[in-house]
View 1 (cartoon, rainbow, N blue to C red):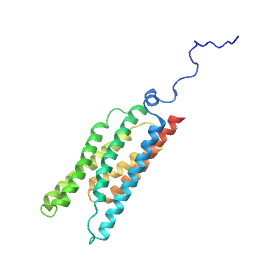
View 2: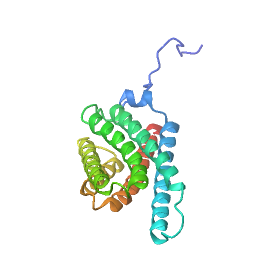
View 3: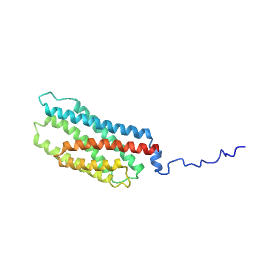
Length: 211
């Protein structure tokens, strides 16, 4: 006769005891892999946007392209979505519940505002150059400070992924460059590298979830 009791509760833990239960319950490996892929897609889109902008600078006699406008309209909500998912991941995996929300939502709102403001500059820049330049200066200063505040909040996490530590440092540099206004192009390049680091964060979480 078999000595196995079918009514005995399982002896092995149902959840990985090394990981927070909220992380294991709310995140699947395939979900994290998709987020990592979206972050890489953002990096590719931002690279294309920078390349097209450089093309327009080198060949100003050519008619303006529509693709950069479409890319901006696509990349800004995608970046906002990725940051919101990162916020949820940090809350469940590292217990980071405070200090991010205000800087995060301000960053998202200003990113959408900057997208609309770029269209206004192209339409009315010749009529109101001084006013638009002053408003643009103030907008990017506040945006850079919000990114800087968000990056400093990330650095409070204890024992983060190496990818998350790199992402925080890159965002800190992005915030400083953006707030300076004079370094907007380096800020975009740093943002591209930061998006690759963000993809690494999601992939690291996926590997941890699979293990």
